[in-house]
Amino acid sequence: MATLNITTAAANQIQHVLAERGQGLGLRVSVKPSGCSGYSYVLDFADEANPDDISFEAHGAQVFVTPNALEMLDGSEVDFVNEGLNRFFRFNNPNVKDECGCGESFTV
Image (cartoon, rainbow, N blue to C red; front, side, top):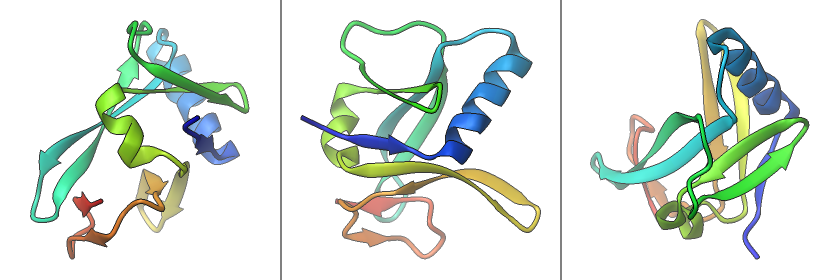
């Protein structure tokens, strides 16, 4: 069975943006071919659960993963970090073998 861990910081941010937005069930994560290393993460709001989504819940927040991304994300941790003026979701993904220099794409 696949796993995806959601940190407290990520859960708080998901809840915050959904509350600001006024709708939505959670965060949807998928991957797409992109960049110089192969794949990039795609984040979107999940306003409804698709029949083939795999759902993970922790700390009161849900993350929906598309089936094509599940193998690449299995065992990952979704975190939300503040680094200087930058705030973003970070994926601590044990399946990543290499990343491009800018950090926008990865290889599994």
